[in-house]
Length: 261
Image (tube, rainbow, N blue to C red):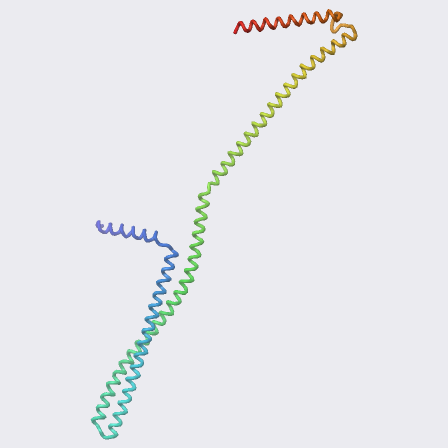
């Protein structure tokens, strides 16, 4: 294959591709109907011109026939009057008009055939245009439906429902985690409060028990655990002494800890 043939094929292929891409079905259908209507107008003009020519030929044929008959009558009149030369001249004129009439008759028959053919073509073209208009409306409706379906498919294709649902799942997981943390915090708070309450009960209960035992000892005058309780003055003095000793021991322990720091 020659270089020029290859170039020509590439150029034609590119042109065909450009034409195919540039074709809009709706515009092409409208243009096709418009072209057919222009052809219809031209065909109607051709039919009208053919009919006019036929009528003119028919008139000429009738005139030729009439003149031929008229000269025939004149020839007969000349013969009746005994003028052979005049009769001969009239026959010559009659023959000329008869030949013209014969020629016009042949042309008239031909024109009649052409007019009939043009009329059939005109009727056929009108029928095709009517059919094309109906088909055009149907195709345009199908084109609109196809475009709407294509747009719907493109819209559905661009929807990121998977990502949206994944986001919902992630948010649900976070909510569950937040609820779990809140439950754990509530449980810890409840446990801490319960523990504090238990210690407060223990601490409060000890003081009450000691005070109750002391009150019982004072009322009964007996011993709390072993032996006799000392008198009230001795008991208070002993308790104060013991408290001072405990306080002094705690102060010494604090001093020791401070010296170590």
